[in-house]
Length: 455
Image (tube, rainbow, N blue to C red; front, side, top):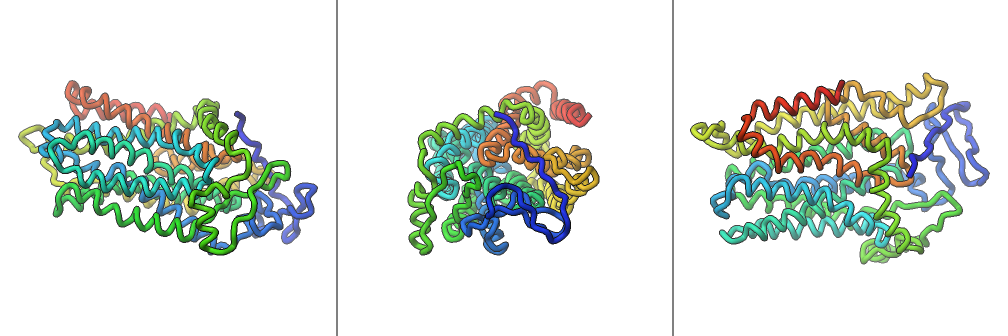
């Protein structure tokens, strides 16, 4: 598996259409001083030709799906201590139920993303959200003393289903937006995903202050249900082949009802012939991408930079919420929620910065260096982003996806594994480590790891 060659000429006289291949239907037109890459075709089925309103509507629905799906598995991240007396288990046992959801985040994309080859992206997103909804109901009902195992299983499957919309969303971005628009789109999408990881637990903390602990699952049914309805109502299949040598699916029905049936029930009409071979390819491609040099380099950054916040979020409750007499700080669920809101400031700053500069900086660099685009220009902002970690994740993600431009869904599977694995591993090992060396020295190691990464 090799990275796609995405170098493109950005030169040309203003207002002049530039022919980029032998097909008379395929031209590159200008948007201001920027050549549109990839060049739009003359086919109305091409998502690049859709109106911006149509694109933004689909994108907004996918963003909500990614947010709702991602926040659900860790909705009890700040409140699992309250479940200790319910199940007559230790805090470590309940922390493991959080870790199981992280394991689902890692494994789910490897298991379910290949289904895109059979029923299409939109159907996989839709049915994954349905799975999340069912798992959240199941977790909320597990309030008996003997329900710990069932509760933990629900967390595992919620993790498996919950991470899927966040993985598949990058495919819609690549399909619908031009090169000079993708940076903004990836910024909005990925920062919402990061916000979901933090915000799910935070909002659960607010809920648990005045309601029973299982309400941290009940409230999520609102955004998850809204995502299910909006995805079914508005999200369309965006796959379109610009390569005449690659088989394409037949056009979908124009009637809304018939189109929804073709797209979601079960969705096999959104895929061209050869589903079996494509299923096998999509099952193995993430493994190939995972061990590509580019992915290993960027994955190392993501492994540490995003793994540490996941570890911090998962472990925070165990040493902040216990009473002072037991060595903690005695924080209530409300205090825990406000404490974690400090991360929201960084996330909001990253979103603003990324929206303003994720496209402008690399395009400016391309113009300064002769007008030829190279994917590596996406990394122009990484010096600052090494300090502002949410922004760094966004840039690296955008860069690696564009390196494997023909695999926009499979590539995030690998990146997601890098993002979550460190946090998952740490949850199982740092509890004993903390008990031996204390909280301070446990985090001293994390800071040293981060500093070595930046240097």
